[in-house]
Image (tube, rainbow, N blue to C red; front, side, top):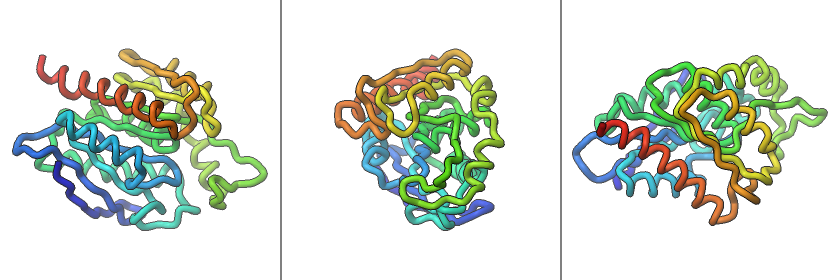
Length: 241
C-alpha cells in the first residue's frame, strides 16, 4: 500500500491527514475514518483498519480533527459543527483524489466521530455506506465539563444539543451499527436507538463484553471484519452488478 500524507484547510483550522491507497493504477473505493473526540489518525484501531482495507482493495483516509494530533485548533474549543466542517473538507479532498472512485465512498465513525459521520451521511448523498461504532446521540452537560481530563468549553454541549441526531438518522441507509455491550462511555442503548431510526438496508452488531474502544483484540478484530464486509458489499459487490 502507498501512504500519501497531506494538509488541507477548513473554515476553522488546518487539517493533517494521510491517504492509504492499494498499489495499482486503477481507482479504488475509499473509506473515510472519522475518529473520536480526543483520538487521532494514529490510533492503533484506525491504522489497523487502513491496513485491512488496503489488503481488500479499499483505500482509506485517516485525518486529525480540529484540536487533535497534527491538526490546528484548540481541542477545548471544538464542537460538532467544527468537526462536521472538517469532515466536509476531507470528503471533498477524497472525492477529488486521482486514485479514488468518487461513486464509492463510505465513512467509518467512532464515538463523537460517529455522530459527525451520521450527520454527514444524512446530508450528502455521495456517501455510499456507513459504519457507526460506539456512537452517541446525546452529550449531556454535567456539573463537570471535563471529558477525558480535558476541560471543554460549554459550547461543545450546547452545539451538540442543537442537532437532532435521531431525526437525522432517518435519512441514512446502508448503515452498520457496531456497539460494545459493556460500553462504559456511550451506553449501548444509544447505539440501539440510532439503529431503530435508520432507514433500510441497515444492520446492528452488539459485541458481547465489548467496551467503548473495543480494547480486547478479539472484539476489535470482529468490529473491523464486520465493517470490512459491509463496505465490500456496498462499495465493491454492488458496483459489480
